[in-house]
Length: 228
Image (cartoon, rainbow, N blue to C red; front, side):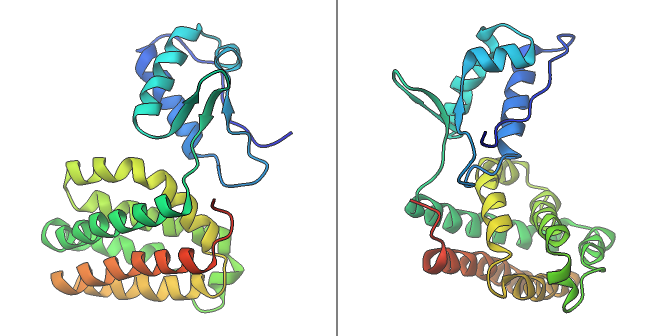
């Protein structure tokens, strides 16, 4: 059986409608939808049984997820978690480059020295060949680094705009970090970005973060074979 959503029965002592949406969205975000054996179909009856609730809040959550681009509803076939095509992914990366580079610019203006120092601490255990030796751990740290850039920007609207893109960027970064020498190049890029943040070099850090993401796009366009 292929990989599927990790769901637990729901305690009904809170706002059910919002909670079901959060549960389904989080479950989708934690699932690698680009793995070949991943089950992308979401059956309302099965979801309701596994969560221990009626189908109505499931249906409402699915409609909201469709509006946000996480799922697609195929008439007479069902609901499916949505994979993006190569062209859509490349477009998404371009938009992400714009958002995160602006976030990095804002970090130099609004984040404290202690907050910026915490970014360096993330990579304290990764040096030289140890990046490849601890690739899974590094991959998670890589994701947290990019999340932190958005958070430290202090711009809620920017962070919100990036939220629905992040689900695909997370999958992309986790899947491509093991390819070629991307892990080693990634940590070098991150350390240069952190140095520019520490020095409050606004223009430099904006350029570095944008180029870091555009380099990911170039790699995807050249090498990724698992997108339509």
